[in-house]
Image (tube, rainbow, N blue to C red; front, side, top):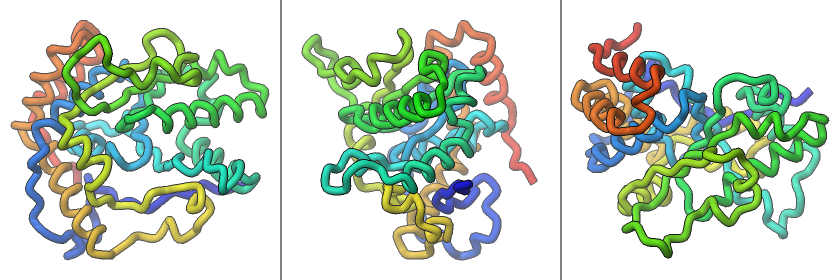
Length: 287
């Protein structure tokens, strides 16, 4: 049986054994935009389990990890699907497919688990064309067919939140989710959007130092992925990520999260009001 394999990432909420590894004193110039984005992602999640796909939205995950007492709704899904459809590499090998499915199953994302029912499963990521989401859905559907699990039972739990580059509203605006068959196949209302200022979107998606390497298909079966990295870029990324978690604990950020979430339509739902009550309480670091 294939064992799950995922990149090593420090627990930033309980950062044991970091010592002098973090490098630099990061300036969180993007914090206001990040906070508003995180609030909207959470409010539009339908009280579901949030899976942050890849690395682009790591800062959203880190901020919410610092702000929320219960991190159970937050999951990282380390995965880069950019090479899956690369014609030079060909289709996924049996070993790659087995490893991908083992990783998904470890995160509660097997077709059988999804079809069994439960809260919505919400994938969120920075979105340009929607290709990552489309590939992800195709892989889940193929797995469902292989296992004889009804896709209609799987897809009813799936939701997508695309974090987009903010544009002025226009009838001619291209919408990433409207012309992709795999995404259009989801249930009505399954796709939501949250926008970021272009400079912040570009930073998170293209230039921000990351704690882990891009987890492409070539690395899914690589045992070295489980080893921590200590290079200068990783130390820089670690310092910034720790600062984002710490910011999430502050009263100022939690207050802004609340002020943003109360403007969302979901404020009519008891689960969001309960979450807001939690955010208003003094945040204490767990031992």
